[in-house]
Amino acid sequence: MFRIVRALRLISRNEGLKVGLQALIKAIPNVFKIVSIMILFFLMFGIVAVSFFKGTFYYCDQIIVRQTIPSFSVDFMIANKWDCLNSGSLWVNKFYNFDNIIKAIISLFVMCNVSSWQDFMYTCAQVTEIDWTWKKWTQSYWVLFFIAFMVVGSFFLLNLFVGVVISSFNRQKDLLGGNTLLTEKQKEWIDTHLVVLKSQPEKKVRYPSNYIRRVCFHI
Image (cartoon, rainbow, N blue to C red; front, top):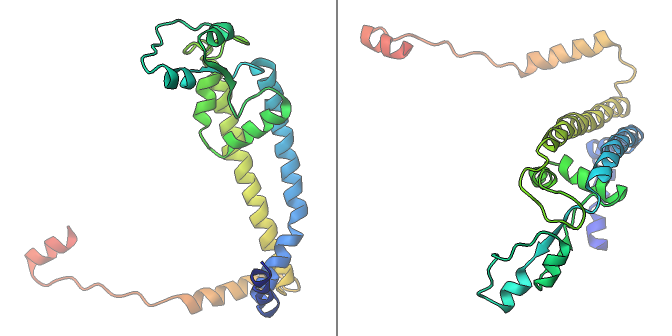
């Protein structure tokens, strides 16, 4: 571990890495502002999710019964928790659920990263009541709730988070890099010269003299 830390000495020797690290450190306050907005947004959706889906993510796990009795059939209708336990199965809860506000925020954060968010949507569209099994598309209108969350939470807030980090990084990088004393016109003059230096001559295209080759060339 200490040998890995020795590689950090490169930062003190490389001006670019030093400027980048200092810029990231000074961008942290703006990052916390965006994080607070995201937490508030997750809290709003989490309260709604807990109110309607608390304790409804439990399902009947029949894996133990199937291992014990290979010929076990699902012909026995399991309608609720007690039917599941009487059949020798387990009444278990999903790892990500909406049983309390903390778990709801964690589940929404996982969804926000576009990680199997459709599984949450399908589950919430099938749940009925606490201690009762799911039924397909009993509450299909909740699909709109999750689509709205993905549009605002994933497409807007995450991109806003990334945009704030990049803009803060560039601003701090300019300040630490020594461009803070330059005016806007001086920066434009420097950018123009950089464009001129990077520009390359364009190769002139010569059309074939033969008619057939010229037609093929145009095609």
